[in-house]
Length: 441
Image 1 (spheres, rainbow, N blue to C red):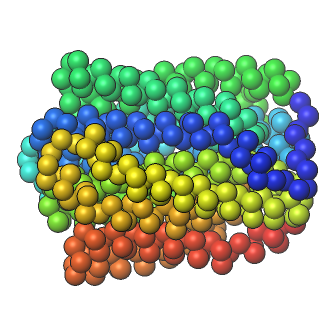
Image 2 (image 1 turned 180 degrees about the vertical axis):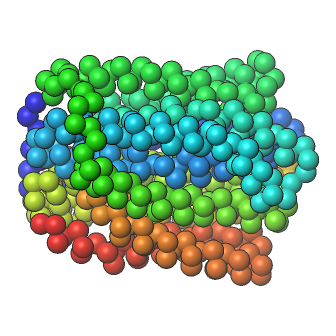
Image 3 (image 1 turned 45 degrees about the vertical axis):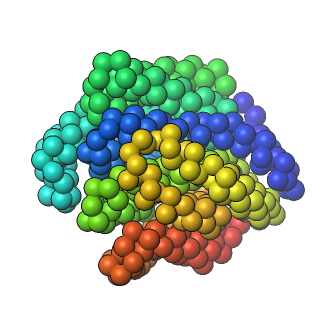
């Protein structure tokens, strides 16, 4: 298979065309969260939405802490693809699969610890705690499949097959929505049904696309993946170093969102529930804008592998501009349709009233955050993971300190203000480290 050669003058149009399939797949991910939130938000009791907020935040932190299975795979595969080293690409996938299964089993065995830690960390009613325990007990079993999906998505993004990675995510999200809706609306399984829907959808998707990827590698790369010479110390060390940096970076990032949930719970279950709803808007915008980040990860890795500095600089400039202008459009749509969307998500009047008062943050954050989203993709593609880790640790530390005082004096508005500043800090720190990537050329 001949690697795709990008011209030195990569245009906005080329980035946009490569991003279109990712738009649809990334839209499917937050849509799943919105559907789950809507299913819980229309059961008439705040406890279901509060429990879903805490449980999904905890599991998101656990699962996304190992998002290096996607991010690390993209950078390494893209650079190997630029060098036409297809056999090593297959080895990288197998090494990640092996590592993923070991880590997933360990996490499942630590399920009681996760539940106990969650109950001690959040101050909620006994009924809410039981709902949280139910969700975590089921969702934790989906982790092996979710890790496999991360690796497969990273592989297809790395070789610039965004249409395949998008199809994978769309099928996963569609199955999740179908099963969760059926279990909640038809079988009245409430929070258990939401978790069970994720579990079943994850395994079906992982099995189907694992088989597809095996055949894809044989046909396109004309090699058969084998476990021979899989344990090579230098290769494992590189993989572990990259993955560990991303692990630290992603752990502290997901903790910051868990921290938002924690501070919201201190303000009361109504605010906790409202923040769950509002975060769906932020997540929707983030995943939509991440389409540019995801599509350029492969291009950036390719340009680094080819040592094409001119092409890299154009990718950075054009993708950041596209991301910002798209974020402006999202904010305008939020401004117009915010109340209508809130009314669909929940039928609880007090939650609607509080949500209306926080619309300003939902409108401001997307354009401001667009810069850090896109810079993340650039650093992932270049495998500049140490700088990502250091920048994120500094940003999160500042965010936690700021959020404590801003929430104390300004309540929930203070919490959202600190979240806005957090995105600014992420952008500034990554911009500071950007020149380190240029040293690779």
